[in-house]
Length: 267
Image 1 (cartoon, rainbow, N blue to C red):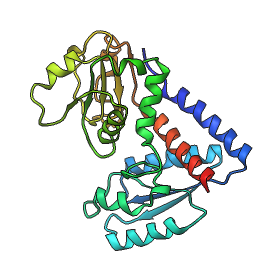
Image 2 (image 1 turned 120 degrees about the horizontal axis):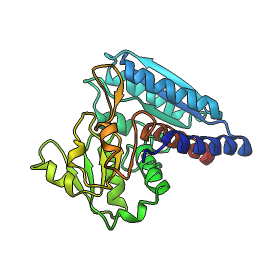
Image 3 (image 1 turned 90 degrees about the vertical axis):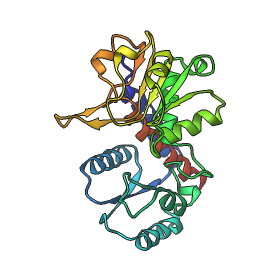
């Protein structure tokens, strides 16, 4: 069964809109976009659009991909000290001269609404999205009883989910580029969360009734967004699966905005 992430996201957005009105909040999110990556620009537009719909103001700061660390630090420090800005994010991917460790630690924890800092005041929006999906299909109880596998452990995909599972005390397997015989692990898995951004899952390798959560995505030869698996093929095998687009993505945006509202409430 296909999981409708758009529907779940809209419910959360409606609740946030009501919360903002009820508490007379004025949440503000600053988004830093470095370079002119068209996919990044598309993601920023989606965040800006959904934020506006529920009453969150956004500041879009566009910087050249060649921007130095010092200039970026200066811009973020100003946002850190601006009491009217409640959340700060830097859209990934980053240019080569800017490291993940650098950007993660210059945003103060009270405004780290992406949840990348180890001591962040917020949970990762993507982890929250995956949790919400599993909860919506009644699968949370299965996490501790069934074999759960994460494919990929990148900074913005697999890593936050691995952190979430560890914090919840959930045993899991991890597949990365160095894993030996990943096909066997996939065949034995009851719940798979894939965060690669490449077609890495073959429907023939999946256990009948598997729950498949697709975090990774990429553009195929037709320029269309695709999941880490062929959606038509996995539909015949999986008990539940998330589509691309319309699966984890919309919920991740909703959870990001939920973090912004939480930050505004604390001020």
